[in-house]
Every structure is written in structure tokens, then in C-alpha cells.
Image (cartoon, rainbow, N blue to C red; front, side, top):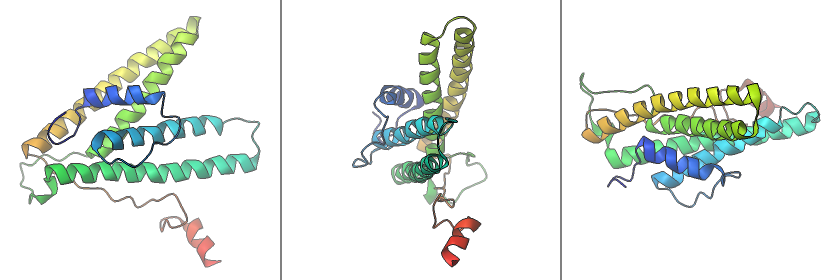
Length: 201
């Protein structure tokens, strides 16, 4: 592992693939190194994948749908905080926020935490789609295999973006901000008019 403790895309994807089958429930948050935070983030994505599949069941009662939606909102809140935690860790290790920012500095539209989240989701999609392909036959199997191929291409694309940005941060030629999460998915969210209305009543 590099001295700064941050994983390159290949190592991160391998870690997430290995974690997928044991990430049915949100992971223990007791460790805050980069690999542990990445696994916790992946566990959130696995949890939400499962809940979002369940909530599409047409036989569910309205009350059960509402309960699952609240679980997804709570998990989304934790997921956003984990992305922010990864970014804070990167900033603390690499200090990209301490540079004044010249015209030649590289900036990226997504942070390392946001890119790690995208890699997590794509890894999960590939693992689950590949598993479905093994069970499917005929046209469905061919469609699943085609999707795996396209997801793999997308994964490679995002991995390249992640590695390039991380390399520039390590070299001191890039800047990165920690993005504050302003949509909190709960009743404290000041951007949600329904939440404000609920507090006023």
C-alpha cells in the first residue's frame, strides 16, 4: 500500500469486488483508514441496491414502501457523509487545499470520494450482472453479458479518471475541495420545503 494509504483504482476495485458478497448490511464504522471507509461506502451502496429492489415489489403496502424509502434516505445520508470522510482523509494526507491555486493547477469536477463512490456502484453493477448472466440462458444471458461488457468499459473509464486525479494530487499539481453535503435526506434538511413545513406545524 502507498505511504499515504490511498489505493489506486485497480486495488480499490479488487477490494470492492471482494467486499460485495459480505456487504449485505452496512459495515462497522470503527475504522477510518481509506480501505475501511471505501468498504463502508460500498456496504451502503449494496444495502441501497437491495432496498431499491425490494421497494419495487408491487405487492408491498404503502406503509412498507414508506418505511423502505425512509431506510434509503437514512442510508443516503450516511453514504454522503462517507464520501465526505474519504475526501477529508485525502485532504489531510495530500494537503491539496493548502495551495493558493495557480492557473496551471489541475482541477476535477469530481472529488476522490465521489469517484470512489462511482467505482463502487459500477463494481456492484458488474458483480450482480455477471452473477445474473451465470444463471440466465438464451437471449437473457446474451443481454447480461453485453451489459457486463459495457459496465466494464464504464468502470475502466472512471478508473482512469480516478487514477489521473490521484496522481496529480500526489504530485502537487492539482487542487481538491471537500464538498459539503447540503441535502441531508432528513428533517434537518433546510433545502426541503416539506421538512420546513413539518417543523413549523
